[in-house]
Amino acid sequence: MAPFLPFQIRPLEVADLNRLLGVFRDAIQVGSAGEYDQQQRDAWSRGQNYDSLISLLSEGETVVAQWDDELVGFAQRIADNINMVYVHPDSARVGIATLLYQHLEDSARVEGIPSLTTHASLTALEFFRFMGFDSEGEEQADRGGVNLKRHLMRKSLGNFQ
Ligand SMILES: CC(C)(COP(=O)(O)OP(=O)(O)OC[C@H]1O[C@@H](n2cnc3c(N)ncnc32)[C@H](O)[C@@H]1OP(=O)(O)O)[C@@H](O)C(=O)NCCC(=O)NCCS
Image 1 (cartoon, rainbow, N blue to C red):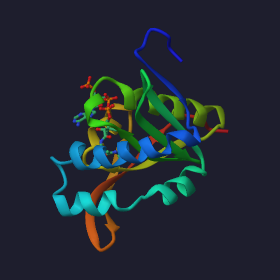
Image 2 (cartoon, protein in one colour):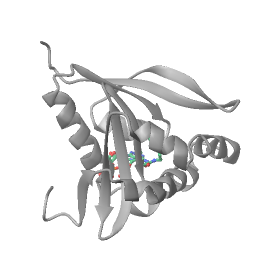
Image 3 (cartoon, helix red, strand yellow):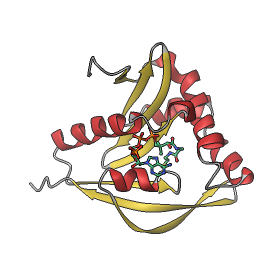
């Protein structure tokens, strides 16, 4: 944790889950409005509810970003996959996703994981490029019969054992 930053990165707590669902939905509905239409955003955001998030977040490692008393972002890594990175649009472009991601990359390096993958939304494509990922091609994600374009991306961590 860096004390000079206005926010802190910390592990997920059960009490975070309600706010985390709000961050997830607002990040999609507002943050991704430039890349996906309303039908796509609704289908994506309906993909998780409170119960499914509890189940999903029981896997892997999840970190959250807290700004004052407010949860403003979260990210999850399951093994070698960055499964989720969501930052509330009111707190975008101040480096929160960067810090969340760096935490997960650091722990992957400690585990000796040689490379990380992610299925990046079009909204997150430039963010992951900035983090050193390369696109391995476009994919279509099916969310309840609605297609969303995304990219399979990979970053080598140089941990070859
Ligand atoms: C993608 C997302 C997580 C980025 O969060 P963020 O906290 O705003 O990202 P950061 O501030 O750490 O950005 C770091 C760098 O990534 C790049 N970047 C981030 N968002 C970008 C965007 N929308 N367009 C272009 N470049 C972007 C920039 O280089 C940025 O540095 P800069 O602000 O100095 O130019 C956030 O926009 C989000 O939650 N989007 C909607 C949900 C989503 O698509 N999640 C990913 C699912 S795979």
